Amino acid sequence: MPVRPVTFNADGSIQAYCDETQHSGTIATADIKHAVNPVTGDPDHNLIVLECPDGCGVGSVWPVAGGADAAMGQQMFVNKAQNEGCPCGQVAASDPNSLGEAHVKLQVNRMDGAGRWALG
Image (cartoon, helix red, strand yellow):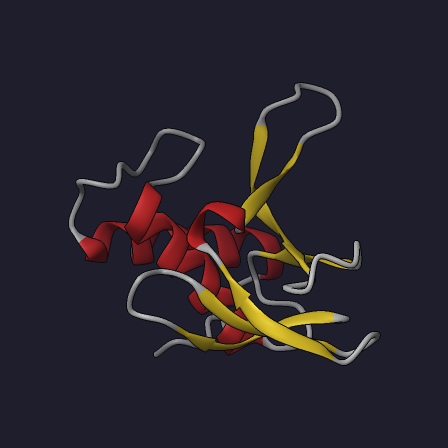
């Protein structure tokens, strides 16, 4: 992935690195967004778009199952669900963290099948 998480910060932001441009920096929580479903125009809870922290325009779409880095990708979705809830409405930001993690695990199982969960 050209833009990838390197470290998760306590405030919900991500330290990220862009392989293509070799830029690095912090992506604020508000800038970690779900992709938009082109048919409905709604946020898609199975995809996150990470934009280069430098603002150069390079971005990566991460699937909920984590793509090439299952643990980092899945943790990104868990953190997002725990901090903001899920756009599908099944998890609210005020819900216990375990609900956000369970919801993401269900999404991973639906996308890539049982056995893909990398977070333990």
